Length: 358
Image 1 (cartoon, rainbow, N blue to C red):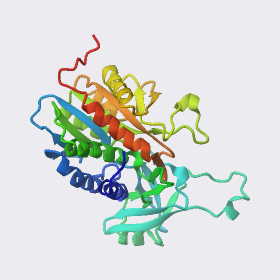
Image 2 (cartoon, rainbow, N blue to C red; image 1 turned 60 degrees about the vertical axis):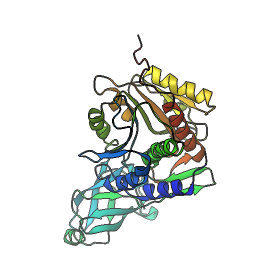
Image 3 (cartoon, rainbow, N blue to C red; image 1 turned 180 degrees about the horizontal axis):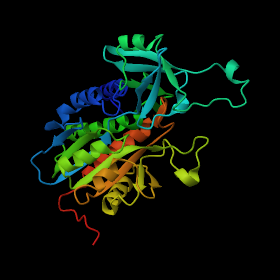
Image 4 (cartoon, one colour; image 1 turned 135 degrees about the horizontal axis):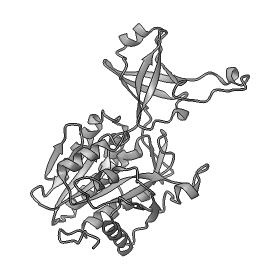
């Protein structure tokens, strides 16, 4: 599918708006503003999960879900000479930190800093050359004392994000930090847009849900599943493109950007919903890939599936290169196909569906 200018403008703004775990509200505002014309009602819970509802009076409820938060860092310790040590907020990768510019979200606004690192000249003579670890990466914000850092509005507990912004590459890929998983928020919003613009009437309530705090334990999904109490949940997140160097396919599976959405097989994935998705892909000639997860998918699918005594749930993933870096990449074609697959699957769901295996 082709993306119109309004959709791409939203995607760029949404991705460029920092939304670290626990502080997702700025990104959520962008998302809600975009989705409002396509839904009947918007709701927000106490921790910031947002959802747009189509047919809010309907008894049968279907969720399509993504998570809104991005990985980041916390200020953890400020030295007497003004350097800042960090801890993770989510799965932040210490190996990409050295020489990265950062935004420190201080009490007086954003302060720029850099992850410093000793020059190669000073390291090469050392047989035990240091590698980036949580306990040796540090941020320099140009201050010379702890007092000066605090005068800038920076204190323990302040959030730190990367400022890297969205671009398209070779007319094939979207590239940005936090495609994991604000690209999911974009895709479910586009499903809502398509339903509205194509004047589709659904025989159930649809809850387009953008959850918080996935990166630290699926917490937003866990909370909102109990609030909505859905009958069915279809979750979208990213998964690894395993065709780039240094990834072991025997362990990580065989998924590739450009080859279509990835349909997951896992204990928490409900067979009937999964097969409905696969049948829809075949009938509509939407390319798809298959992947397996042995115990848990590691996505919000698990939270929905295990809520409320068990909610039939499925996972449609988007292949992504370089996860949890600032240059995450996804295929534009795959993004369009995930949107189309969710949209077409929804058109095949009815409240009369048999959802028990026996």
